[in-house]
Length: 362
Image 1 (cartoon, one colour):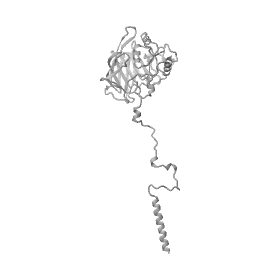
Image 2 (image 1 turned 120 degrees about the vertical axis):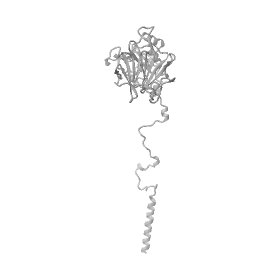
Image 3 (image 1 turned 90 degrees about the vertical axis):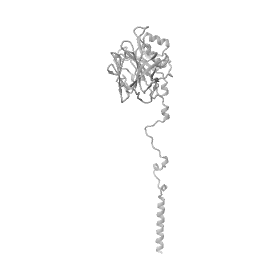
Image 4 (image 1 turned 90 degrees about the horizontal axis):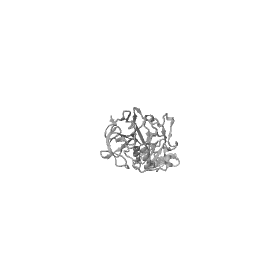
């Protein structure tokens, strides 16, 4: 009898061990009487990994980007359609440094009377809080600003320029006429008149609205690479431009920023607003013909129609190029081997030099 009981107990233990081992098979569900922490009650297929802080744009998003017509940098469609301002900037030695010039999309440099040059700064992408000093108008500056359907900002002008604007109905902001809320003399700069007239983008925009000037434009700008590209040209780590013995510019390439700084008459040029050196991505040198104005004594005029030669400088290199302006209503176009040039993104300077201007590259 005892022997039967022992055999039954042994059989019972054997059966119990077999059931326990079966309950531990892979994929079995744990006993509901022992609930897991809620954080573990998730099937593998529903686990989500937190996204990285950096997002990667899709091909469609990249293709949908809007790029500035004047800098090639990303911009909103609304801002890109805005009408630009072009401001006549005084470049007399007593007017330097210049406020807001680092925020201009394009800076034109042209010869005026004596041995001086002036700048025409086109503002479109940025809205500087301070711009200047502002100086008087000249006709060939107006001709250039008309190419971009811009609003011209100046402080007085030559008889020729004033008559020209009146005949054409040129949208302009004249410091001789508008109030000091739009263009003012800034004595805090330690500059004296006529080298201390300033404005701001906000003030110009308010005046343009009051004057009823068109807000938008469909004008086109330049062709741009989306990233900085090589020209496959000759070396141009330094560019020397000597307009006159006492008017010299040097542009020096910085490989870290892939832009050029600017030295005028031996002094590094900075933005008066922030004291930072300029960062110029492209330099276009356009050779034109200046000569005394036959109808207005004491001022120059320029042949800006037709075609001519020049150089494109960017990313430490330069190429010989040609330019063409078919008529008064067309934009000046620049070509390399019969193809329109493509600029690198960023600020562009266009120097309109005479046949007597000395140009050297290193």
